[in-house]
Length: 323
Ligand SMILES: Cc1cc2nc3c(=O)[nH]c(=O)nc-3n(C[C@H](O)[C@H](O)[C@H](O)COP(=O)(O)OP(=O)(O)OC[C@H]3O[C@@H](n4cnc5c(N)ncnc54)[C@H](O)[C@@H]3O)c2cc1C
Image 1 (spheres, rainbow, N blue to C red):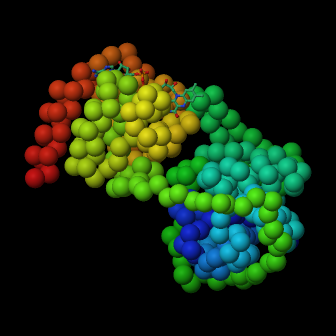
Image 2: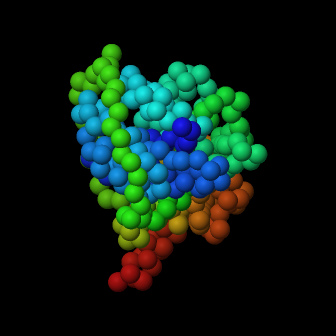
């Protein structure tokens, strides 16, 4: 058997959004190649996740429904993936650029004797081969790769692929496989970070602040505007490094990739490493007192002003319009 093997990550049987996007991409690639899509789901709820993966485009699914796999463990998960590899003998293996995918893809690739392209934003077929495109040089350029070895392994960036509309009438075989899930490491504790409001990655509007705000108190106004617009607050790395806001707000190459419809960049210069996190944004609006700031090069609208009086007036107007 040959096919496209997709790691279908889930929480208690509910597929994560990125897995539905990858299944959509896998379906399109498989149709071009005349191959099958096989989903793999692990841990408690894997059966449920597998059935959902079929509605999102997989032809069949493999599961290891063992609670020992509920927490990610490199040893145990790679063993499960290698067992699935043996079943499928895939030509392509896809997983998300998630905490799991970042760790698992290289581990798996080395054991399968192949390479891996991380953080891909585009997947296509040329001459029967998978072409994997990813940002390089801090997002300033894109590079495309094919794999000389099989399978071609890629991790895929969130929001870079479109999911299919789930079709509950689709059916396919769900097969449980057995794996030795013993691991040399174990999780000794887990601390949940309480997040308030809309997740930055899911927000339709992001109001982001940089060093130009002059201090952490500037973020208060950004939070107010985000609330009025039903969005979330983001930040540049400079202000995270200064300790003004937590790292969970950082947008960019080493932060989060966001894809809102509207991204308001306040006092952000537009360094390439920041821009790497907003390349998929539809409308960037920049507020910066330097007319030559790089952020204006990627902005649809811009205001060359001191952010403080501008933001106060803008916030009032937004509140008035909403009332
Ligand atoms: C390996 C690596 C990875 C990195 N990853 C990231 C990343 O993920 N995300 C990220 O953001 N950065 C990242 N950086 C850092 C990046 O290079 C920049 O240093 C950072 O983005 C700059 O943040 P900033 O725009 O807030 O600050 P600055 O560059 O200091 O810019 C501040 C801006 O505010 C404007 N300003 C000042 N006062 C006002 C005012 N009163 N009103 C309006 N505008 C004003 C200025 O004109 C200026 O354009 C990374 C760097 C490296 C080397």
